[in-house]
Length: 253
Ligand code: ZN
Ligand code: FE
Image (cartoon, rainbow, N blue to C red; front, side, top):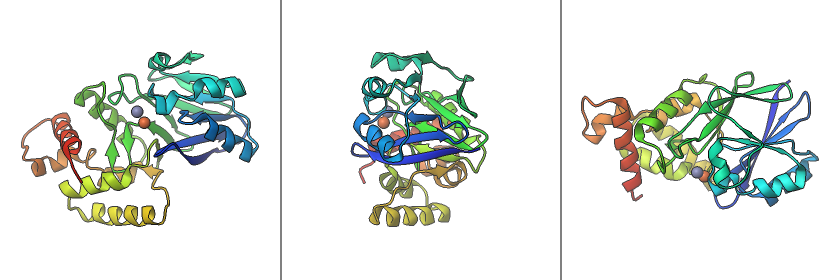
């Protein structure tokens, strides 16, 4: 039986996610941007919370851990770096599997935004929770890691099945699209950007996305192909990515 995902807005531009293993009724929340909003969503759905899955230590991802654990008794699971903010019940690393009833979530190293950032991938349902590593038409800033590390992380995510549903932790897509249009004039991107602007004008989310959609139009995944647009020639893929990230960091649009 499938994993059911419920997505809802938190804070100014975060998303909260509840993931329920239908067979067992066990429920996890992925990151804890806003404990009150998550508790409200659980109450609306009539679900109890069994597990908290953190992607990284930032307060808009783990800041609600303590309050949610106190309110629900959920088991807190994440990379060791989360303990900079609050305690974990279980520390996980790349290659580990988290079992939520019948659902098996693979832990994938997604370091770069923070050093120990991880993603969770459910291969049976082709669902990935990628935190602040891969965004719709974007990627996370490099607060702690190197471009080489982030490129390796993005490449691991890009290697997931094309029809994987990708839950990113922020609604940054319109701003990402404006930057993407400044470095890429591919028709696939233009069509995607129009759809994104229209969705946002209607107040609709642009998350989740898919691996196929990101491989087609995300300027960071396409950095090697777009290197010429940044006046780079004959550089390694991670160097093209580094230049793309630097261009986005400097972009005023
Ligand atoms: Zn973050
Ligand atoms: Fe974040």
